[in-house]
Image (cartoon, rainbow, N blue to C red; front, side, top):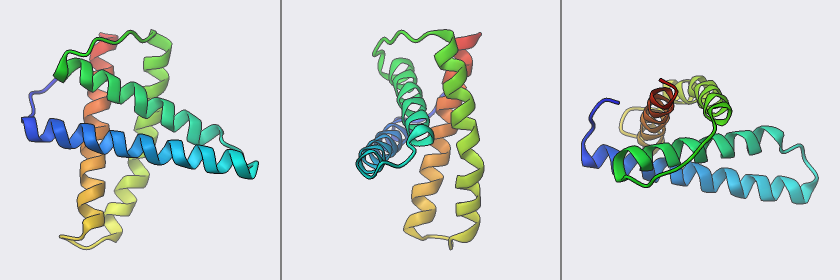
Length: 120
């Protein structure tokens, strides 16, 4: 995995933690309303696997994850990137949304890289 600064590590972890919490809250809300939660649950779980993988690589917090879960999580995280890129194209430079989405995109890319490294 490529080397990134301590700041990028901290911002990426914080971004994935925030995304995980948002997806957890969305899952709870959708469950209460009786909505279909399949996609939200898959994304939440994939974010958790990616987050755990980065924590392991950068902070030596050992995890165990089966290859199938890693493959599935990597695919789900990759599927999230196009929507973030579309959001980035719509927002102005220097806006809080652009900053948020740039950090999220970086975090997802690094999580995907760490998951790919686990498969090799």
